[in-house]
Amino acid sequence: MDYLPEQLVWEILRRIKKTTDRNSVSLTCKRLHGLDNEQRESLRVGCGLNPANEALTSLCSRFLNLTKVEITYTGWMSKLGKQLDDQGLLILSNHCPSMIELSLSYCTFISDVGLGYLSSCSKLSALKLNFTPRITGCGILSLVMGCKILTVLHLIRCLNVNSVEWLEYLGRLGTLQDLSIKNCKAIGEGNLIKLGASWRNLKRLQFEVDANYSPGRGLACVMRKCKKLEKIHLDMCVGVRDCDIIGLAQNSSNLRSIYLRVPSDFSLPLLMNNPLRLTDECLNALSSNCSKLESIRISYSDGEFPSFSSFTLQGIITLIQKCPVRELAFDQVYSFNDAGMEALCFAQHLETLELVRCQEISDEGLQLAVQFPRLSVLRLVKCLGVSDEGFRPLVGSYKLETLAVEGCPQVSERGVFGAARSVSFRQDLSWMY
Image (cartoon, rainbow, N blue to C red):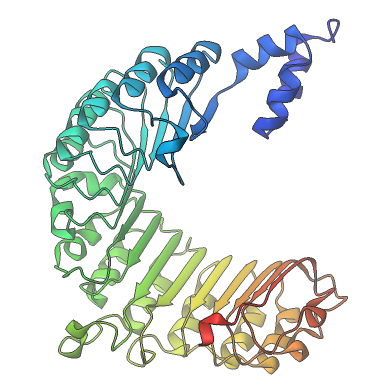
């Protein structure tokens, strides 16, 4: 090992992806240990960090070139030791000058004070927070005022982030490209208007709310301003209408991915007097204007009855035929049936298909999958109409790289054996009862 060129040793270490493997290799000799310390760019720690602040200081002193740090306390209990607190973020700010991305999950001891320490991290461009209940809008504001090149901001279940001054400041900076807000009760779609002109630079947008949220029109009103948007995820988009998606399609020609989770007709009392506003018109606009659209996911929320007033089969087929769709996923889309599967025989770009609770798909439609030109990944979940017979043409054909079947009562493990190079089968029928 001592005689190998340094460039070759660096390349060897670079190709070792698993942290456990890298740790083992670094213990084999002093040279590898030293080079690993220099080369290590990412660090993921959590419940095993005890005592937290002292252990983090030791790790940061060893790995001097960290650019990505993830701290997660999923499953934490008090008997596992004290969590990392604000002092831990001060350690990061002092020891990790090259840090670009920071993720904090279930860090219940970190507050606005800790985020304030991070404001000195001038290279920080991505911040992801998942259930950090002590952090408020003031903490977010103090961070963004110092980190002026922030391009990625993800907030998930940050229940106390309420003020919108940080949104206004990000709007003035104009650097934000990726914004994800999920189940943050104090942040409404109307607040997002505060981003102002920054909407034009946004490439990815994800906004999710829980079932108790009362929708407004804020988010819908600014969608047509997103001229650089590449990916959009709308969950329970009650307030979004055809005209909003049409405006988005006409102004976001770079759109590559869209996810729509549409409320079922009876899933929200609000919809009894306010019918769904998304129809084939918005799908036609997407197919006519978004020539780069390659990922489409449409889902209906759980409800006693499926929705019959939204997208038709023809609208869906038109979108698939006109766009270079590589990834297609439907969840409880009852209008998609065997005729839709027949249309996919002409989908020249389709590589991944996911069907969840699509009860109009039968064996006849599933058998057509062997004719899809480029399909390599197929996932079926909770589909009542398919059986072993539907997989028969795929068995031994080596058509698929990956097949996953979950909760389909008429399908057996023996029936899918040999239907793909890699087969995953799980029979859990508890969803039926």
